[in-house]
Structures are given as structure tokens and as C-alpha cells.
Length: 287
Image (cartoon, rainbow, N blue to C red; front, side, top):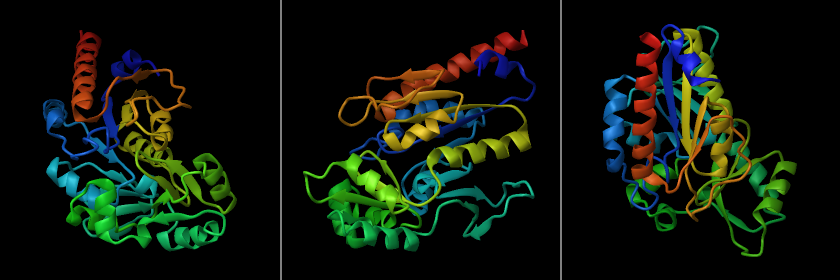
């Protein structure tokens, strides 16, 4: 979609979707403070910033509060979409009331995921979050013990680590598919889930906003293979480098920005540039 044409439409709405770890957050400290200049502009323009992560609902709620966000968010690789109860969902959407959110449940519950994982364990030796105490999760991720407890509250998605260094993750994922498990690589872990993915959840959010707000121009930022479906679903895709300094393969997009670096400093730099460009194009369209 051409950005200039989309911005000429009346009442166009910008939506920003972002991954968290190694994208908006530093992958070691989980700090987002270098991104504050861009975040302030996003807040001032009332642009919805929608967090899309493999993190749990509890983890995302923590960062959502720190970021003073009121937008929906997508948890556990698209397993659930959570809208504030103040957000008037179109009548055709059946939601579940969970705490202060109306949730669209897309993924199968973690109980079903773990049942299929047990079958997969006949072929591979791996260890998942459901088997780990919080202290072990903290050690693997660099999270505090309190944050690791939030990370352990899985509802749809099981992060795992292969125990045999000779096991090939591509072969592992192909076998997982045979057991009806979706399998994607994140920054640190392989993720197993059933139904739902980031891209499908983003498309649902876009459809709802279009129903309520009209024309939309969408932007997404990510760095890992589990972000590909999200990046493909939007008008402008921003791809950051992975932890190993490379860019993920398999992403074809007509409006792609591939960046050097990752984390909040890179996020801030590219978002300031995009926001300035959007502002200039809007002024041109109105003149």
C-alpha cells in the first residue's frame, strides 16, 4: 500500500505494533528508556501502540503499565488479544472477560499444548517453562525472580530449550508440526503452541480498527522469526537485527526497513524518522 495515498484518505488512523525483547526492550536489561523520545511523540499524537510478544499476559501488563499504554495488546505469540473493557468491540466478536480486559482467545489452552508436547518428547529431549522453577527461568533469561514468576504464567505458549546440542531446530519443528504443534523461533527459545500466531492476531486487530475507525496505516517492528507473520501483515515493516547480528530470512515485503542494531536506541531512531516522515506527508496531503 502506498503511504501517501493512505494518508490522503479522511480520518486515517496510524497503528504501531511492536515486539518487545530486542526490539522496544534491551535484550539483557529489558530497559526501554532510550526509546522515550519517540514514545512521547506517539503518546502526544494518540497513536495506539500495540505490544505483540511471546511474553505472557502478566508480563505484558507490567510493561504496559510502565509505558502508560491504554491500547490492546497481543500475548504469547498471538494466543490471546486483550482489549481494555473501555474499548467497544464490534458486536460480532465473542470475547471472554479476564480481569480488566475483554479477551479474544485464538490459541488452544496451554493444557492441550503440553499434552502434545509430551508426545513430542518421545522423539526429542527438551525442557520447557512448565518444567522449570522460576529461579531457572530467571537464570536463562536474566529476568528478576519476580518477573520470572510472571513469565511462568503461560496460557497458550510453551517456550522450550533443546537439551541435545546436536538436535536440529528445523527438524524439531517439522516433527512438532506432525503432532499438531505450531513451532517458531524466538530470540532465546523455541516456542510451541496450537493455533494463533502474531500475524493472525495483528490482522484481527487491524480488521477491528478498520471497522471502528476507517482507513488504517499500520507499522510493525520486530527482530525474530516469530515476528515474520506480524511484519507481513502491516503496511510498513521494520526489521531489526537478531541477537547474532544477522537479519532473519523469509521476509518479503514491499515497504521494508532493515536496520543495523536492535533494542530501544534503534527503535527510537527509526520511529522518530518514521513519525517525522508521516507528519510531513500528512502536511503535504493537507496542503
